[in-house]
Length: 209
Image (cartoon, rainbow, N blue to C red):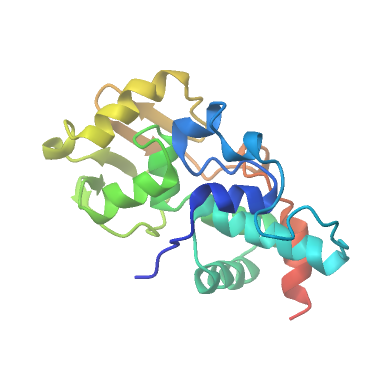
């Protein structure tokens, strides 16, 4: 399975926006975007010509990095969104939003999507009471998600549980943080998806290929 290995803070700086890839650190004055509000690299402070293609590409890269998916995965999500009924850009975000790793993070069971992927791959997560170790598992309306009973006392879960009080749970999810269980009530609507991306620009980019 492929993985994104680039330094998280560098990814946020490249997009000149917080993508909340490092959990609690992103909300402190240690955040790299706050300390170095320019793209990394030797020519970072040079002014770039922001063409239409450049802006569309940046939106696609931003979405990939926000959800932690690789290029081929992202393209496959786009192809799947095209085949589904509805507005392609919105369907694309709904597919990404209902990935198991994103739902684990949104429910407050992990402090970041990266940590959520680790919990899943290490076998700490159950869907409908059955262990699932695939981060890209697509959740459906009505399915339940929980931390396995044998994993409720591990350090990452306890850390997430302590910080969950400051987390706003989206309305399309129902969560019992005390028992580390939750449910997908319905598929999220566009106004409930907080991803800082312009999905229409991504659609325009792929329509040129």
